[in-house]
Length: 90
Image (cartoon, rainbow, N blue to C red; front, side, top):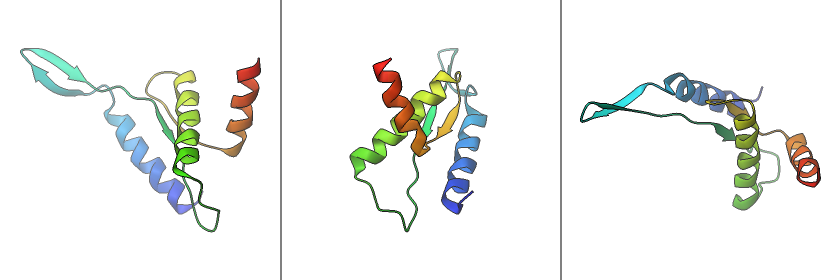
């Protein structure tokens, strides 16, 4: 795994480990955070994608995370874009 991917995996694991924890109390009610996270990483020497493409890749990864259950994270892989396009036509 590349260093950038490893850093994001560490960060996302820390965020996921806190998912569902009580964030705050408001008049006796507990507020908690639940999240599905999609991560897209760009590393040199790859061509830098546009912001639109990078966010699109993260969005695809997020929907894969959601499809795998609540409070999951997914790292974008190039094959996901093709799978997403095939699913759109199914």
